[in-house]
Image (cartoon, rainbow, N blue to C red; front, side, top):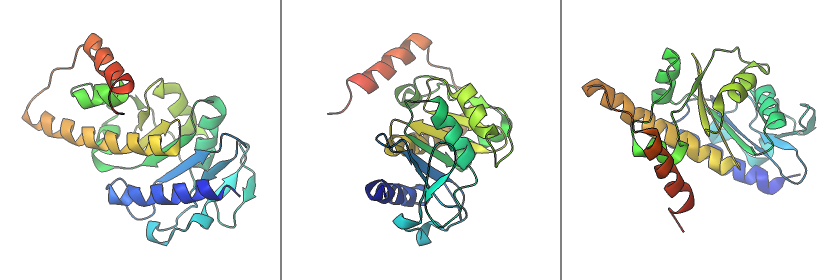
Length: 213
């Protein structure tokens, strides 16, 4: 079931190591099917180059496995927690991408030092608190701190991004790491100025309503 969504998730999962966002078996993507409300997620501990579309696990929002022979990701409970509380979200990505996670290690948000941050995120990228892996606690931190931003850092842990679909969430994950790297480099040279809030709003509106085809 949901074969097209599994194929899409498989292709998106392969982008994570290509973009340098994950190593070994870390990280995961999930997607919620708008029609059925079912969630498809990466299986736990499977190497990306060994992952097949049919390996993805299908669950309902209560965590019951509907289809799949492998254990779902250890972050599944947190993904489902987010989906149950945010009807607008249909894709979630979790990574430990190094530059963004460096900010998470310090418990620091990423301020709007760049137009790219204003464009994609419309605000500073927030940092949530620390939570243990395996239950809903990480999901609770995400929901409490992410607000209208498509990304949030998890203290001592990594990055969660969300979107209207899985592709949008992956784009946000790529952009988080890209801007985190640039901000890190800028901080080696000095302390950048933050872009004024009114300009951030204008940049974000242009990017989301005018830019592109």
